[in-house]
Image 1 (tube, rainbow, N blue to C red):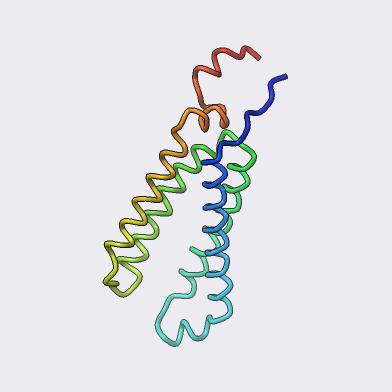
Image 2 (image 1 turned 60 degrees about the vertical axis):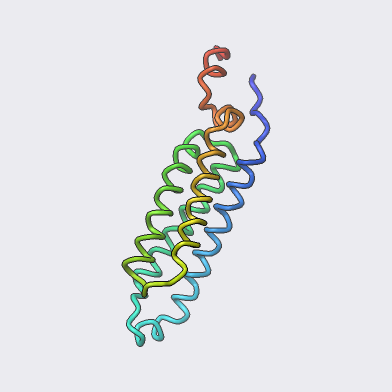
Length: 142
């Protein structure tokens, strides 16, 4: 029997980041439900906020579990989620909100988080942890 390799620190940090984003969106969902009437009064779209918050809460919790347990699907899901969350964030920021003056800072943070996710996922220890490394796949006939 082969033993699962130790979880790399970068994967642990990525899992905590996913958990933090899931909790953040859970709070967003809860606040939307609590202030539904107020949001409607000021012309916001509580349905959009609730659905997007609930979706990212659920996906974040599932991804956190997959990253923590080293599930093979979590590697691909983390790549897709990083790209999807970044795209959704900028769609929400540019289309759904009033323009904000601090867009260079937000763009820098988005870029840093995407680079961190990519670097975390494409290192050899991470690929081995998720079973995506070709050299270890060929050397273990079981």
